[in-house]
Image 1 (tube, rainbow, N blue to C red):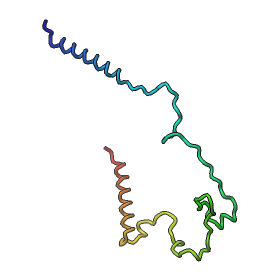
Image 2 (image 1 turned 135 degrees about the horizontal axis):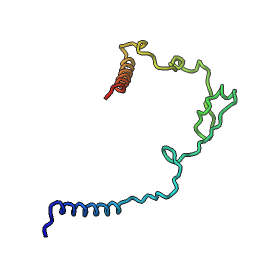
Image 3 (image 1 turned 30 degrees about the horizontal axis):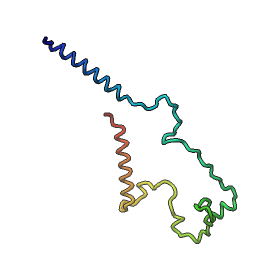
Image 4 (image 1 turned 90 degrees about the vertical axis):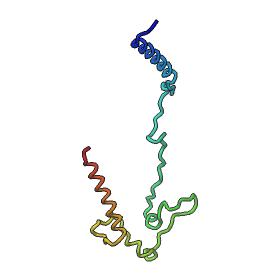
Length: 131
C-alpha cells in the first residue's frame, strides 16, 4: 500500500510531535515551586546593620581623631598643633576640581581633564542621537 506524499509527511510530523512532547515532559525542571519563598535583598539575604556609637564628648572630638583606632586595645590618634603638620596640607583643594580654563595647557593635569570632559561630551551627544 503506497501512501501519498501528504499523508506520509503528516504521519511523520505527528509522530515527531509526539516524540518531542514526551521529551519535553521528561525534562521539565523540578525546582520546588510550591515551597515558600524567603525574602532576599538584591544581593542575598539581608543582614541587620550594626549601630555604631557616636562620640558626643566635645573635649574628645577636639583633641583626638575619633575612629582612627582599628584595634580592640589602645586609643585614638591625638591631634597635634597646626605648626607640626606640613604646609602643603593646608593648601589642598577640597572642593570640586578646577575648571579647564583655570589649568595651564602645558600640564598633564590639563590634558587628562580635557580628555575626560571630551569623552563625557561625546557620550551625551550619542545619547541624543536617534537611531
